[in-house]
Length: 230
Image (cartoon, rainbow, N blue to C red; front, top):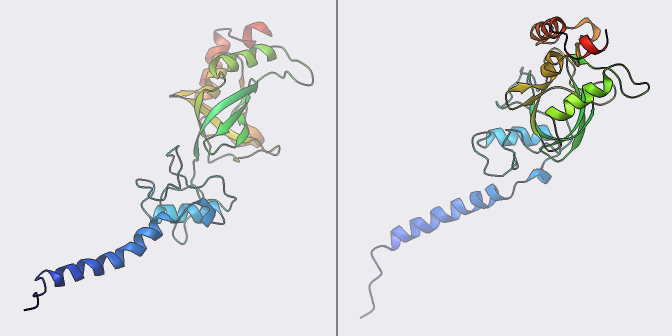
């Protein structure tokens, strides 16, 4: 007498069917990387639509976990952490980027390596320090030394843009506040007396009030250039 079919055969058939449906999805979920996108914006939109920034199943955010996908791709770019909809801006008001200091150029300019590996020069927003190139001005070398003490090579920093200012100047330098831990290095240079408050093109930057207060205190305390260059 032939053996009777197992009673679980319909159940097994159902499981096999489900696996057949799910398998392509799993394969599809694993096959996306930055090379699949033409621009950073395309990658960011996909990233946000697939769980980002809380979840990153495709590993598009890399190792820095800053909520930005495929930063090495060309623009158009989208640095928001909410999925864009029609009528919304493709740029957030404030951009935050993780970086490491490569070197200090002078008292208000540093070179950094971004989390995506790119090297950029950063001009500190809102301050101006005495020159050390093209003619050394009073206090220039000490202003540079002050920046070097606060930002030795390898220091982890956060670069923060200002919505009232351009993000890049005419020389291609990033315009940023440089934040070390919870310390605003731009403002620290002013408070130490090695920088003065600088407002470009009569457009006050967001932190100008605090910077001016720091400058008044440094001047009253005869710190930095206020003592050295009188």
